[in-house]
Amino acid sequence: MPFSATGWAFEQKLPHPDKWTLFLLADYADQDGNGSIHLDKLCNDSGLTATQARKAINRLNRKKLITISPPAGLFELSMVFYHLAWRP
Image (cartoon, rainbow, N blue to C red; front, side):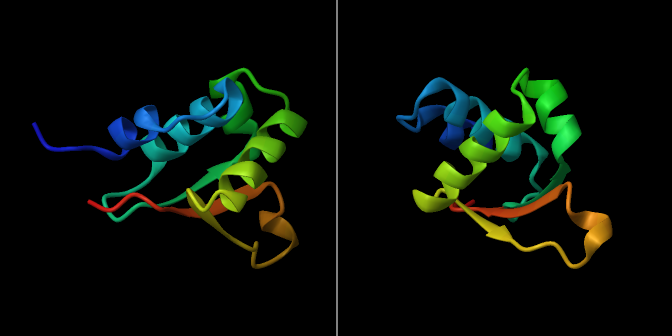
């Protein structure tokens, strides 16, 4: 069975909100580890508040488990664009 991004996320030693957020981001990502998700969907799927989700994303970014790309415009402010540190 090939190693997957979700398996990589699950194996990370992280507190619950961060691990669950990373797992969902890995699940949403494409085969190259790139992804985007609307913050509302992430909150709905994770059970986290928007504040908790943003904090988890920022911690994952600081730990270099994900790289965040800034939004291109006002329309995308509630979108999270990211790349996983996972390598296929």
